[in-house]
Image (cartoon, rainbow, N blue to C red):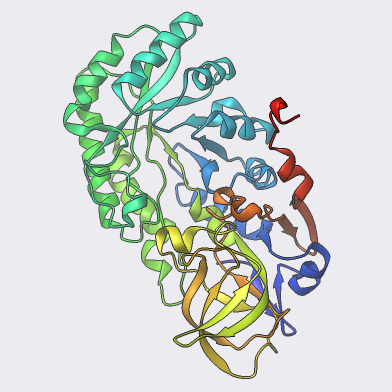
Length: 422
């Protein structure tokens, strides 16, 4: 569910008219809904009522400080994968004891900073990382609370680029060796083994892989306890998908159904459970609003050329991802056409949607690229020297620009001319 709907012929974000907002802010821009962020967090969190748990929002999905602050005020912790994301979480007033640090390539400097903050835990992905964390913690005279991320070799049945739980993926320690690595970790100075971590992928809409993976982890936790490890928590990662297209049935992978699997598999273990949802909370809470520049009729196809591009939203060309494209104003177009919605970047891969049927637009008309709240702005770049687009947060009938559009002076000013040019 989201809070973007037509009212009096114009799409609104909650109670904010998007046509008026576009006139004020300029296109393209991202727009996020406070009500949707709030609802998605509460629905997921409440699904685990009765179990000791912590929801750590995955900052990588949407790291805007206003989004993080919105979720922090609801009680969310944060899952971070870099020193920059850790600093963002702290800037959003998330307390360190609610921050989990994941990621396969933590640097020594990032470890030092995280230890100084006394974060909740490190999810350790490899033996070399474990050795470095031990060394860094020992030199700081600190103890790192850690879990080893276990790779269960389970196919998440999702896109290959966002699957993380198979043997060929770069993530985690193979489950067949993990028990041995836990024994090594328990003997290392500066390390306190506090839990087990797992994350098998993203945009998962078939719950069977979760059931398989969590069954393996439950058995693994029992084996670790038999070995004498005192485990306080199990970090189950994120990955639960969202509906991107109207024909998808989200009820089949609703948080309540996911929670039923978690409770059945892991409830009897009496461990605190940590979850790391990102897309689930932010994905359908955001849209990308863009203006039509031209309608171009080629020999083989019709193209709707808009002012947003792959540098603003790379998911369609990177993952082949589907985003619904809707007219912001209902009166747009007299007839339906089938067209590719493309941007101005000089790449054939610069598209937002392929072969879509939509009302024929005119230059200046507004289109909404739906379900763009996760992995949209965070993956944006300045290819073709295009400016990063603004981000706007709506709350009832109010809105605020929570990241302004850059300037060409700032963009070009990042480059420095060597002194030898004179």
